[in-house]
Image (cartoon, rainbow, N blue to C red; front, side, top):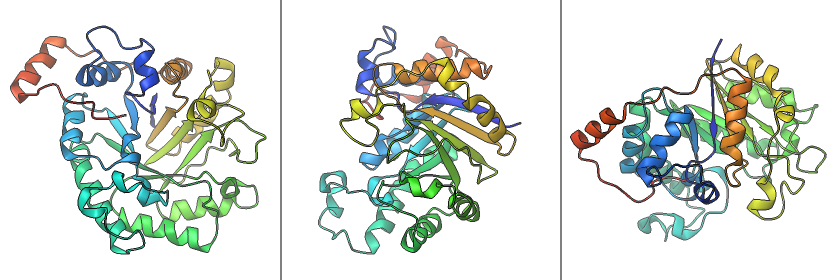
Length: 310
C-alpha cells in the first residue's frame, strides 16, 4: 500500500499565524517551517501561484525540513490561464505582451529553475496545476493540458479542475483517460455539494506515482464571496469518515497519496489535517533533535530571512 501523507495548504497563512498554533520561539520564518514539519510530512506552497519562486527560498525550505518531507507546489497563475498582474512578473518580463507565445515558455523555465533545489533534494511532491473555473472540457482545453504536460515533461504533475463538467458522469471516463495519457494525477476535491460549481466527491487515480485529495471546506459560498466566506469551515470526524475508504482505495493504486486541507481560516486546516491523520492511523513525523538542528544551521551559515512561503 502507498504511503499516505496528510498536511495543510499553507504554513504561513495570516490567519494561521494569528491563531496561536505556532508556539513561542517558533514564530519566525525559519521556526514556523521547522515546527510545521514536526507535525506533518507534507505542505502545499500556494505563494508560487501569485509570484515566481526563487531558488534561494527553495534551498531554505530544503534545509529547514527533514528528509522525506514533501512540498506540493502550485503552478504560477500565467501557466494555468488565470489573469496575472504585471507586478507578479519579473521586471524584465512585464513589458512582454501576454499573447506572446514565448512568454509561457520563459516563465516556465524560470519557475522550474527556482524549484530545482526541491527536486534535487527529493522534497518536491508534485506541481499542482489548478485550472480556472471557466476552463470547460473542450478541444482547446485538452490542447492546453497537452501543452502543459509537454512543457513539464519529467516533472510530477497533478491537475485540479474547477469547472464541474470535467467530472460529470457522462464525461468522467474521458477525463480519467486524458489525465492517464498525460501521467498527471487527478486531484480529488471535497467541497459543498448542490451548488452550480460543485465538484462531485470522486477519488480518481490517473497516475501510478501519486494521488491527491484537497479539502476546500463545505461553505455554501464556495465559488462566490471573499476568501474567508469560501473557505471558512471546520471539518468534523463524521464529515471526514466517508473519505477514509476512498483514500485507502487510492493508496492501493498509487505509490503515494497526498491529502491536503485548504480550509485556511485560523487553524482550521491544521486541526482538520490532524484529525484526518488520526482517523487514518498515521504516525506523526519524528521530532528532530534541536541541538542537531542548531549545529546544522551554524554549519550552513543560515541567517533569519523574510517569510519565504505562504
